Image 1 (cartoon, rainbow, N blue to C red):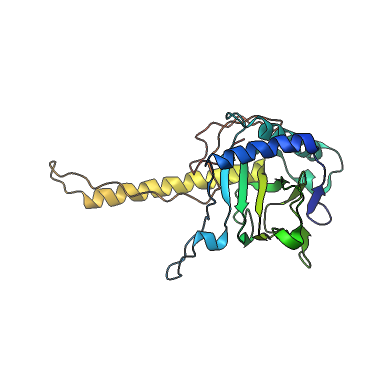
Image 2 (cartoon, rainbow, N blue to C red):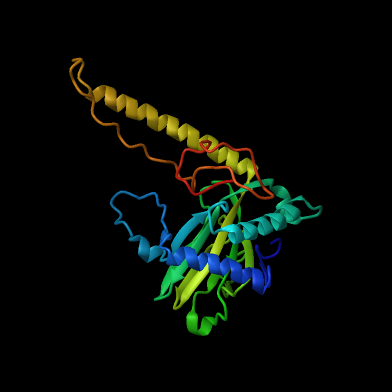
Length: 278
């Protein structure tokens, strides 16, 4: 991470445990529990919108670990927690020493269902939402990128070249979530599974939550002003429906989770969508 901005760990949990995780993921996918991956954009006026499937083609499910049939995914995230916690608190840990990591997202379980599905070059955290480390675990047995594609192409720090990471079974990769590591998933020609968790820096996350609270307050005030202007003074007048508030661009709301990096954060402490926990 210090030199290139990424780290690859092969044979992370072993074949037996990896297969248990893969079977859980397949069961969830076959049960229809996955939904299309979402694209968060700040749409610019007069610029045509881009279809989500042109940007990312994966199907996803968010997993906290305490859901039925997810015990092995829970075990995986706890093992990743242990690695991150140890590295973040050890002495002489380089750049990681600049961060205080005590919470993370729930696990995003993703499936690229072949047929050239992909994810264009992007940055996970372009707007300082708190995410500092991206960790991805792969579940693809006998993967051959020459036939199946699906490579994770990532621009290592300082970005003068690229690293092509095959999504091999039981492989774990870490990289920076911010603009240091733009990355893409190249077209996959067979089913490709991955599990991703993001780790927050406490200071940046707190600042992001404060910004979100202020933005929500401004939006609520604007809604109240518009309603007051549109409502007639006659007491028999029915007020118009409230204007839908726009949510700030944090990835999602916080909820209590389990694992080595628990944080005492209430479930309503971030007023955005619903995929992030601690």
